[in-house]
Image 1 (cartoon, rainbow, N blue to C red):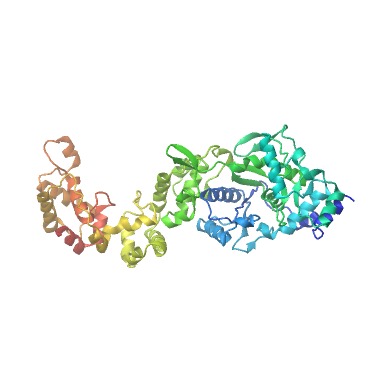
Image 2: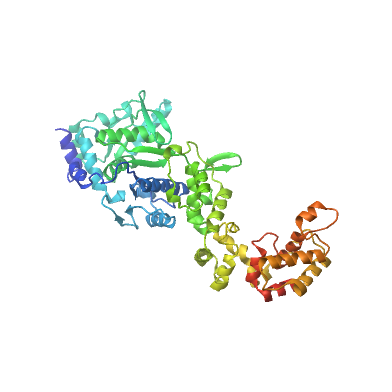
Amino acid sequence: MDYKDLANLIFPDAKEISYYEEKYPERDLPEGAIVTRFAPSPTGFVHIGGLYQSLIARKLASQTNGVFFLRVEDTDQKREVENAVSGIVTSLKDFAIEPDEGMISEDEGKGNYGPYKQSQRKEIYQAYAKYLIEQGKAYPCFCTPEDVEEIRAKQEAAKIRPGYYGVWAKCRTVTVEEAIKRIQNGENYIIRFKSLGREDRKIQHHDVIKGKVDFPENDQDIVIIKADGLPTYHFAHAVDDHLMHTTHVIRGDEWLSSVPLHLQLFHELGFKAPKYAHIAPIMKNDNGNKRKLSKRKDAEAAVSYYAEEGIPAEAVKEYLMNIANSTFENWRRANPDKSMDEFQLQLNKMSVSGALFDMVKLLDVSKTVISKMSAEEVYENALNWASKYDQELVEILKDKEYALKVFGIERGNKKPRKDISKWSDVKENVEYMYNELFEKNQEEYPFQVINDKESIEKILKLYVEKYYDENDDKQTWFDKIKELSGEMGYAKEVKEFKANPGMYTAHVGDVSTVLRVALTKRTNTPDLYEIMKVLGKEEIERRLRQ
């Protein structure tokens, strides 16, 4: 009896691997085209790190006329969460990171290299496992979990490296005849890869991001097919990336230590290995210490957080691209109106150490993104967000015509307003434009330089009775505020005030502030003239008299 008899006994129905090699031919792509994938496990929400990886993978494929696909790695079915695949598909769609191929719903995929769900590719993995057994490169292991635990305990007691390798690999030396007999007797088994590596030998690997990295060879006889007939991640990803013709594996650097094993699997299967690019994790400053963004501790680790807060997907992508390549910030400064698609991402310019997640910076990027939107776009986005998260804002925005005027203030000019950083800010940012919210605000009027009641009352009375005319253009309006300032004994010009500080107690800007605070209860708003144009004569006079 030989290895073929053993392989046929274990996988009697498995096809020859030549069948799959023909079924999934080389892709017909231009030279230099990159094929990447996002390959999450359906074990919960999409992490911001996963989104970061997919953004980079999508970008590299797009800029080289390659392919980006979504593969779901669901071989660990005990950890699978219900509807997680739909959640992954939706999360990518929400950020306009659409795969060319792969899963498009919980159980459906598109493309010629599927199925794109590992649990649906069982027969493929078994064909390649059978091939390895035929070559004497894999074997059935009859060790129970208790046996493996006993081996580990002995290794720990002897203070030697744990694992199933060398003399500790008990089933490696089981003869073909004995293995066949034990299988025919109904003994349970799994399939292990037979490693020819030695830990005292080194391999050199060139990582696309990290450069040259030295590792000890892999000598562990890892499990490749589990008791349920499904593969482990290590084996499945090697078979899949070969058959789907992945050229670059973009993944988190927690996988870096697996490189020797993965390269060994590719080599023993007779495959050309893809290039590996290990991305440094996104970190968080926690009381002066850097740590990875955590699913358990940090709300911002889940991509759903950004939708709930109302941070535009475009802003999140811009921010992540800034983390990916430090050159992006300068490119964006030089090309403020170009699509991010025109930026050329370079893997070798990615940081080797983890970038700190900076919410202040993200919101700053978001302000810029929203500032470039039209009033109509701001309205639609705010309304879409409010319909899920804030019914009061939905009611406020019912008068679309008025809302467009409000959102149109200081928009579309060279220096547009940058007061909105997320859709959840909108209500607070526009409340003074809506009488019902303005009246609800019980805070005191925060008057500044001119803050005595008598002067404030005089300014407001004079303005309403003598200087206010709703038909004034902006220059006439401001000239009248200068006149009012002079009548009150204040400097008509700021430079005049600065030149003679002892002569005046206030200047025209301070008078404008009195009007601003009386009309909005705020010291900082977009252009006051534009605000007044939208509020209208009746409301302005009512508020100033009040």
